[in-house]
Amino acid sequence: MSSAQSQARWNQLLSRKRLGQPDAAAEDQTRTDFQRDFDRIIFSSAFRRLQDKTQVFPLARNDYVRTRLTHTLEVASVGRTLGTRAGVHVIQRHAIQQAQAADFGAIVAAACLAHDIGNPPFGHSGEDAIRDWFHRSPTSQAALAPLAMAEREDLLNFEGNAQGFRVLTRLQNAANPGGLQLTCATLGAFSKYPCGLAQPRPSGTAWRKFGFFQADRSQFAELAEHLGLRAVAVDVWQRHPLVYLVEAADDICYCIVDIEDAYRLRQLDYREAVELLTPLVEDTDRQTRLGSITTPKERIEYLRAKAIGRLIDQTVEAFLTHEAAIVNGDFDRELLTCIPHAQALALLRQRAAEQVYIAPPVIEVGAAGFHVLAALLETFVAAVDAVAAHGFAASPRQQMLLRLVPEQFVGTGHQPIANPYQRLLGITDFVSGMTDSYAIELYRKLHGIAVVGA
Image (cartoon, rainbow, N blue to C red; front, side, top):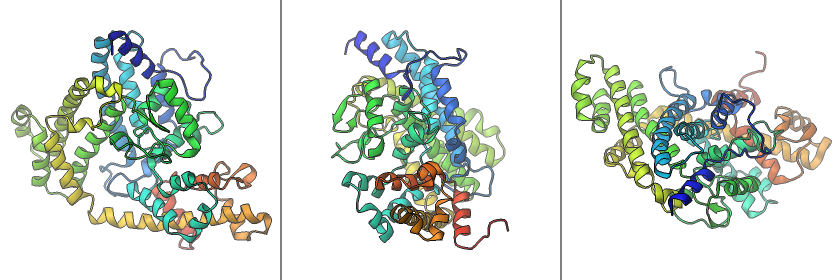
């Protein structure tokens, strides 16, 4: 690809076009389009709910331990640094004049801010719980029966990444075409898996999961067209290059800070945490500063900060080394597998999987999440389908239950949507958007464990 072609390619990838919005000049000249994306996400209700969604250690009583919200803010901070530093070199390399390095940083930061916005309650076990209910419940089997195969697969394989795209482009500011109407550049950088589930997908890192439901495929196709993403197969596109930096920011944060959180919750002792973090820190950092820090907590914090800094350095180098292949869609690895510290990071991940992610508090609340989400889906899917089928002849309890679901997820005037796929998606939107605490509270009230107003 010539220099002129690379420049044109990057200019399209950095598109300021807002999905669902006619082209219009920005009213606020003090903020760039990408900074406005960041602000739109941070002020959204879906983002605020992350403060009460599980990261790794569910509903932790220790205020220091990360929630999904604090994790997301940390990822956005790392992402801004990665994007800005990579942007400096990309702009120089291709003589790009329509963007600044800060634009790269703002795009990556905004995409990082949204990267978990579609996750249901109870962390990744919540995704498993929703899938499990759709596979096992007789109620779900009856509700899925009239759907097309591709529509059934969406729900049987519920995916938080696809739900995130739905939140950003449809559920938030639902009256607007395009939802939050973010720029195509930010949505592209957010879309870790640029494919649907219905068609056979190529093997590879970019397509091992799916990034949009059938209901949202036309919006994703429009996004891909604006960005000039190369089609790989039907409903399958190459990744936006900045996805790799968003992915790396997320992986850097959860790998490193999960070790710190595990130490604070005594799932790892001090010696184990130091052994895992030390290989990621430069010898000069350990020799010049670490010896003067007296408390174990502060020593762990110092190692965490230095490890993140070093991984940022190496990730930017890897992105720039492989930039041509990344832009062409020919790169099929995570950036963190290409860095000098890849082996040390892999060991840290392995130890976390063996000791941290199977800790009793994680398993106990994850198991409870299975029960809570299954019960909520069972209750509300049965109610909405009964009212859709029988109207006022449905039981008073079913009609009453439907009043607990916001109109947005049922239909105008609380009359269920006629399309069974859209009905199921609506209830799934409602349940997956709950916080951990709200899901537990609603479950208790519906089962008489707690009484409203008591």
